[in-house]
Length: 359
Image (cartoon, rainbow, N blue to C red; front, side, top):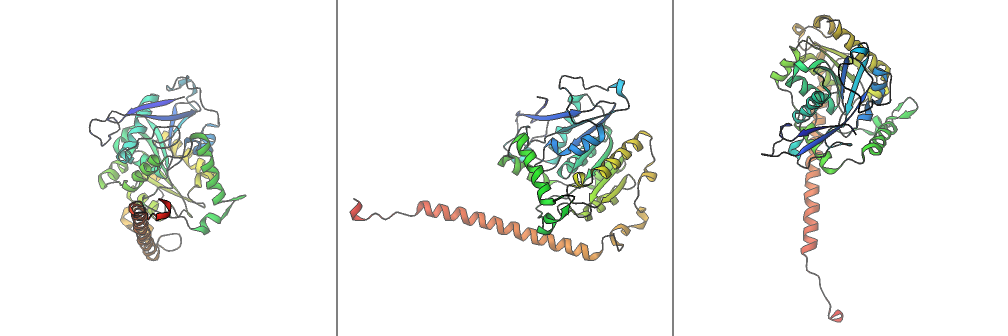
């Protein structure tokens, strides 16, 4: 099986002197000089990129792992895609220490994979947690990025999925059924996510942050940025995608589609068309000002304040209340866990009465 081996030290592990090897499982599809790296989100496997692999390469069968991974000069017009399982999920390694899961460390994994494949530069696309990893990669090594696409990008933290969202019909099934099908696919290919992997990836989401300096490095790097988001996404709220798009002016273009957190599956044709449009625009050296579809920075706050499709103060207040609600739920959950542990400890320590008849 194709693996890229990363040492803990190379991945910026927090444990002093650790040299644990982490194996990153990957699959390649298609051939061509255009290289695309797909980074999946929380608890997902490489197979979740199926609609994009098919749309970008026209192939669903992985490339023979013994085949060379060079520039494919003989297929210059084609596209080669590589997607992989993040550490903590699927067939990749599952480090036990939570400190070995951050978006910066996982961005190092992605860069190590590019080196392993012999890719000097690639179009980097990420979904959900994968978009956080992709943005970290772009900030750390902007010279390795040909273009950057962030699908359903999220600010991280504990978020919930309302029931009405799950029951909404999309095509011939509900979102609940669609999410369940993707979950089963992940289990069948790589098994159930372990506790270490779950807690580690959760830590990566929770601790993710892009500093002003990192945002500036992405914004001024010269490559095109595409942010695709589902209008009905309640896991990664559209408000944050719009905010990020503003901060990345003039490099960013924002595409809003009808769909939820799995907009790449709900609207694959539109998503793939937007991705291919960015690849072609990058090759033709499209000017950043021409690429962006956002208001000028001189119109500060217009994207957030305008009515209709824009974000108004009522939505901002709603989001703040939602955060407070989630924090309270988290604190309640922590208190409940502590209480359960205390009850179990008392049950173990409580003396057992023995009657005389049993002696």
